[in-house]
Length: 159
Image (cartoon, rainbow, N blue to C red; front, side, top):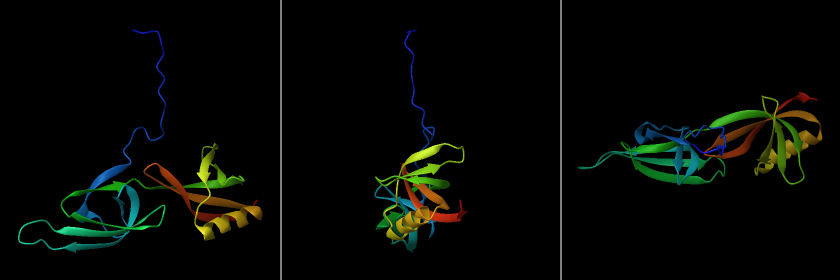
C-alpha cells in the first residue's frame, strides 16, 4: 500500500447520468427530449405510419429550454431517445453583482453565486426592478444536462 492519500472530488449528482432513455413513441407533447445535445421541451409530435417495410416515425418539434431555439428531429418510434433530467429549484435572491451574477440563498442556508442573470429581457427587468424596490424575490432555477438558468420569478412580499 502506498502512503499517499487519495483525494476525490465530490460531485453533487453522484455520477448520475444527465439523460435517460425513453422509447420515441411514448414521448408526448410538453415532455422533454434531447435534440442535437440540447435539452428541449416538446411542442409538437406527429407519427407517420409504416411503409410496406420499415418503422413508424415520430417527428418532434421542440424548443430548447435554455435558448428558446426551435429544433426538429425524426426518430423511428421503436427506437430510444435521450430524455434529460430537468429539475426546477426555488432560491431566494440575496444580491445582484455588477458583473451580472446573482447571489442566491439555498434551502440549507448556503449561498449559490455561480448563476448569471437571465438573458430574457422582461424577466431581467422584473428581477432588477423588484430587487431595487427591496422586495423579497424567489427565483426558479431550471437545471438540465449540467446547465442552469433562472426561468421564473416570484414576489413573496416586502422585506
